[in-house]
Image (cartoon, rainbow, N blue to C red; front, side, top):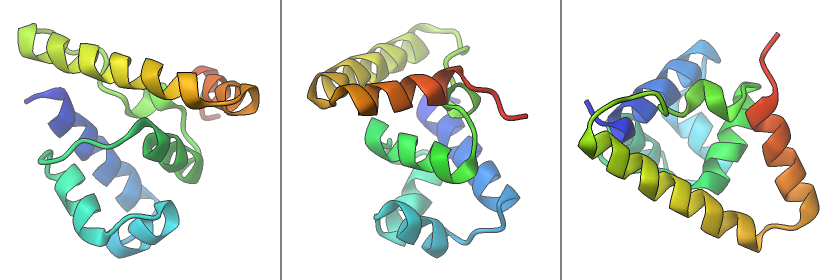
Length: 110
């Protein structure tokens, strides 16, 4: 199982834990319900911006949802792409947005 599939399973887990339908979650983060279905099935990835919003809605840190502990060459390539996307996105953010992301990554759900 690759990181995209693991991430999709984790999103589905937290969605169900919060008693949300795919349609309700999609409305909360501003995407189509079909997009949520594709992400949960591991067919599509999700942007860092949307991950931040998801974590906020689920009241979890990004480290709770990101599959960054997998092994293998394919997983390493996926991690590198994810890290590159994060870095590119951070260059477009202001200080407040970066601070929020830092809080999301470093905080732990009590």
